[in-house]
Image (cartoon, rainbow, N blue to C red; front, side, top):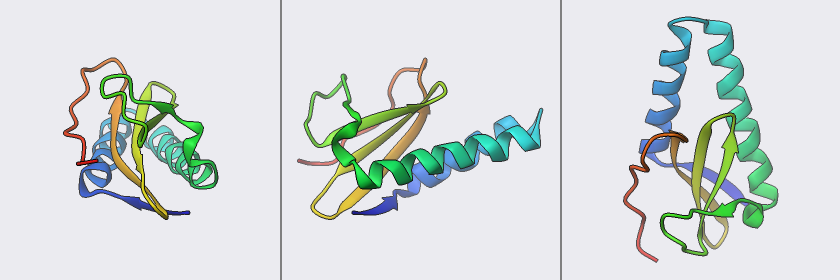
Length: 98
């Protein structure tokens, strides 16, 4: 499968990197690399993530990287990363149509 990032997910990555880099630029690069590595793993096993509990839709999945939730949708031949959010916050995502 191919992987794509929504504009929101790309913005989330940037925001995470900027936030962490304020205190530790090396940690920021490392954490973003871990997120991207986890997304690459999902490419090969797209159904390995758990169903997003707030929506209970089979096509909406998530994996955790540290305390971050990587939320993605499994489509025909694409894993679309929709959002990356700190796991302790309320989910702020409008799910795509089924």
